[in-house]
Length: 413
Length: 77
Image 1 (cartoon, rainbow over the protein chains, first blue to last red):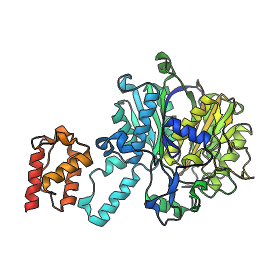
Image 2 (image 1 turned 90 degrees about the horizontal axis):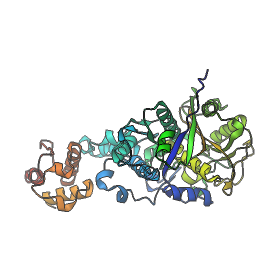
Image 3 (image 1 turned 180 degrees about the vertical axis):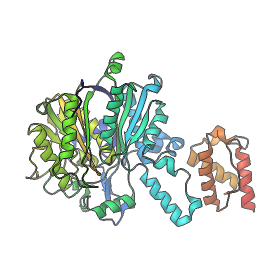
Image 4 (image 1 turned 135 degrees about the vertical axis):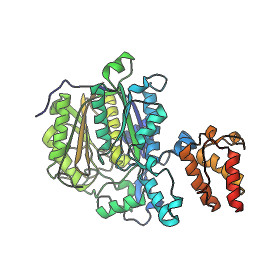
């Protein structure tokens, strides 16, 4: 039984992104819509000799220059990316410590692995040099909530703040959670999304063993190819994507420019397997139907989907089949992961930000590297070049290891 | 590198302290060196100079000069 309520259309007034496609929202959007192949994926020294020794990174980012040593030393890289993206999003919204009522500002940031690289480094220190060489900062830097607390401290946001951990749907669940906090009236503004950076030999070695990641070592730029007949797994990326969301009357009262609105949210659990999604896609279908109901939007009204589209054989088939079943053939579906990599817990934040821009600019980014569409995929996927279109509603879907599904319905401002 | 140089270099490079702010009389707290930072600094000094500072008590009320003297005592010992 679903409790029907009047839809709550949270205003998205700010965007911030740091991705392998570009540092900043403008650079990322430009690359995702205009470039035909990714430039941010490369072999990594830390991953040498692994079957998957490459990753998407924001190599152009100079975090030390942006943050300063004193601030940077209290964060592992995922938190640094979050703070840099949050500063951009808040500036874009025309908000900040001097403007807002600080105890009415929430921070909700998803991450799958948090400060795993620092954890990994400190384990090496302990194994090699003993317990007395271990840093005292392990707990504060590695906890999943460290991105949220770092952003809260950096911006002086004193409302509720929390980390969200639902593996690869963390960013989307964070945005949905922020939507619910705003709707409940416990804050007026929420800085929400996801952040991830796992250039960790330990984690990638394990992902290789799982056979979930692409092993196309001879050509990393072609390795992530969502919905393509030759896809062979995902490619990990680092990044952060954060949105400033506001209660609609709060945005209206200050005359804020609204990029788009988050109008509905649904989440569900497969209760099926540790890694594999429900083979029939029933879990993600329930999340999507719940989000559509929450938004009071009909499937026929959805013009665009930014799909999870990881480039694994199984995800892309299950997800596309579900999208066809629930929405039909008409929406312009894309996956932007070939440009950003699979940023795990950050993916929902980055991809929702891209969905906001797609609605605002009425332009759907193409799925890079989709050369030969898999004939088993039952829907058309936007490819080769960005597609201008007219649409009022868009959907973002995310699936996470553990069966954590989430969907958002967005509308034009 | 002597103890003073090691401490000053670490404060600047690892904690982002401005070199001009570091004098013998500067209290560590005025350099924003809180208890967590001091424990981190302890590990870094021990590693760099291969000494044991376990028994040295460090608080942010101490001055840079007192910290250097404590490190010097261990180096000499």
